[in-house]
Length: 323
Length: 280
Image (cartoon, rainbow over all chains, first blue to last red; front, side, top):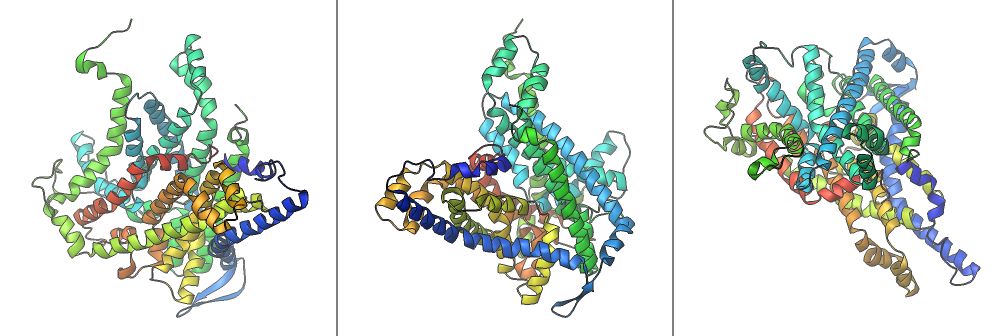
């Protein structure tokens, strides 16, 4: 795992292990020269990243603590205030969005990881054609989310959508899918599960392929059933890979925007309004940048805390401490 | 006792059945997308729905380009995506080389900061960037998207490339140095060619991210002549009349380049997805 690699950093100093070719002084000079070169190579990228990502995040925090007025072609900040945050905490919309986003993240990530692992285990048993299957699984991942949202909207459509037709043909009546809160939430989750489960299964499959085969042979010689050998051997060995897949997914799911924006516009009512949708609406429909930034900052803080908690809880697995 | 099946029956087993289920899971919605794009506009609202387009029609494709100006969106996406990919690979490989190979102080701090930056949700940075671009007056331009896309894709690219550079043997580089080649030359003609797989991985990921990005494209480039594909498709039609046929025709055209790219570079994509768990 990436985080761990950083900890080993000092060891991979390129010249440290090398036998000195000349005297120490020369080596030191050489080191300094190379370090300078390193900074010259690295600085442009760091300046771009710093200016376009770190600055806006800091500025977002400033906006969320100010009264922001949008003027003709600029904006004004007036005074320091906590009012944006107190507005948030007293707003039932924000609380609903927060609850919805957390619920949506838990449910979709859980289903995607379970289903994706099942797919991966299946693919791993495939003797031929694994390459093309990988490509097939990557297809939904590479499709623009807006496109998949339009497609599912058409499938769920109220008068001529194919899903409603099939449900009706199966004798379950004509549910209004996108027009009623609970079915709309389920429909949105299903669209996400379709697009992302294959992505999870590709990560898990890559992890599965790297597991040592002899352990499984030994297990099968000792009379382990496939089910037992999955839970007792595969699953523990796979945990580092699974943790990374889960982390990736939590981040993406928590910031969900494109899918509800196109599929449901956050509706019906506010039932599929994620934090990102709420922030967007407050800022760009109502032009309230102070409260909108507070929504965005709250979402960022929560997702960072969530990731840190996850990493803490699963640190031993992420480190491969189990192996 | 194991039964030996002959002929086609030997393909009847649990694994193959499961694989067929997976293929259907992935392909049925895509099938629906493609056939809907090939239906006559009137057949799109038919009940019961047509499960095979009859008659086949390319009217939606013609409409997408002639009536809805999809060509402009396509061109904008190509310009923004290619410019972003080139910039990310250029700056990212330089920084990846520095952080992976050269004895700089504070590398760990830089790498961890980059990792944290890649965790920020888009909505956190869009409002300040919008105000900034609005104030300096570059909303509705190519650079309005190219600059932020480059910045947001750099951290991942730097990580990927750093891992690759670390895995490349040092001998040739040192020989070059002893022979008195300039640092730039060593980087360009000795190091970079060996990192080609890493460049593919970082390139495919950046390309895909820029091709599919929606939130920034929606807020920064709202004017019709600078919309990218995702924004163009999302804003086709009106809330009361959504031209699904045109949308799906445009979608098929948008999926083809990325589909080919991912098929050709699938190994690079997989190695990028597992970069966290495997040391490069």
